[in-house]
Amino acid sequence: MPADGRCGPGRLVKLFAHLLAGIAAVSTASAVAAAPGVASASVRILRPIAVTKTADLAFGKVLPATSAATVTIKQDGTRLCGSPLRCYGTPSAGRFHIVGSNGQIVCITLATPRVTLRDSAAHTMTANLSLSTATLALSGGSADFAIAGALTITANQAEGAYAGTYVVAVDYP
Amino acid sequence: MTAGMFWGKIMILLSKKTIGAVAAILATAIVSPAYAASGNGTASVKILRAITVTKSSDLYFGKILPSASAATVAVAESGARTCGAGLGCYDTATSGGFHVVGTTGEVVSVSLDSATATLSDGASHSMTVNLATSTTALTLTGGAGDFKVAGTLNVGASQADGTYTGQYSVSVNYQ
Image 1 (cartoon, one colour):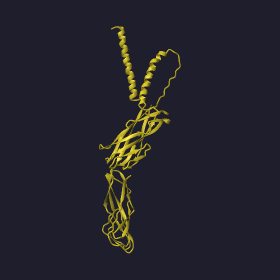
Image 2 (cartoon, each protein chain N blue to C red; image 1 turned 60 degrees about the vertical axis):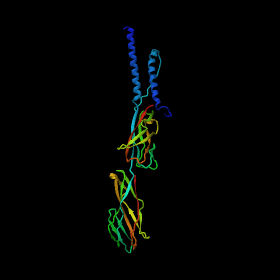
Image 3 (tube, each protein chain N blue to C red; image 1 turned 45 degrees about the horizontal axis):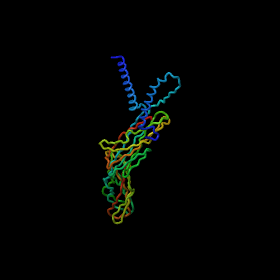
Image 4 (tube, rainbow over the protein chains, first blue to last red; image 1 turned 90 degrees about the vertical axis):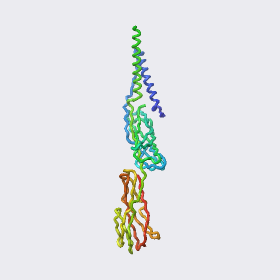
């Protein structure tokens, strides 16, 4: 649960509360319909959120060793190559671009914090993913966030090109 | 059936319908809020095979008859030999050759660990060789590749006769 309390599982409960309050308001409205008065009604129309991947999470090329070790990609895209592994190629953090209503806060969740990478011959590895932020303000109507990852390379990991898909969800609180 | 019972039944039906409608609204709101979005990303890594390098041929300058002045013998990557003025060259020369095995399609860097090597006859006589390779990067098509090493041997004036040998090393690495 983020510090601001606006994102996370708790918001479903809030949604219930809002709906129930709305139902209650409708059902009691008729009781005061005859009385004169002034009231204001407001609504904030939100723009649907669009999420676009701008970069894949790339661990690069790794020469495995006789002992297991971890390759870490930080949110800025830099790589930490665990000893005694050797790393080559160009690493990259995962990156996404969000477009939505200007000034709104959005909540970001990683639907798959653990992703399995597979090659074409049923060999697998597991990467643990993490978000650069769980909440983001859409300044100017858009914002970007990054995905970092830690990949455990087992001893003598089989040669091959491994890939796996992960899902991020972005929502208004 | 009385009128009261009739109205009672209507009331029950309306209530059931209302509950159903509220349940539907809640379900819609929770399962798929229309304003949310998700994105897919790919995580990838390429696991490489350890490189092996095998010498396929030695750099061999052949047999040389020295002269009263210093001169050079050059062996090109093709194996062609250029015998310096005044020298006599015999036997068939060969360039150095290496066979590299690694991950298919990868480009590896190739370098000589030292640009020179010293040949000795074991009796404190020596000559130096300048080494060179035109290969700086090698694509492992089909998981393998080959490269050659050329050399230029500096034969001293009246170089002592004998069999001279020396070693050199190359480095091959992923990039």
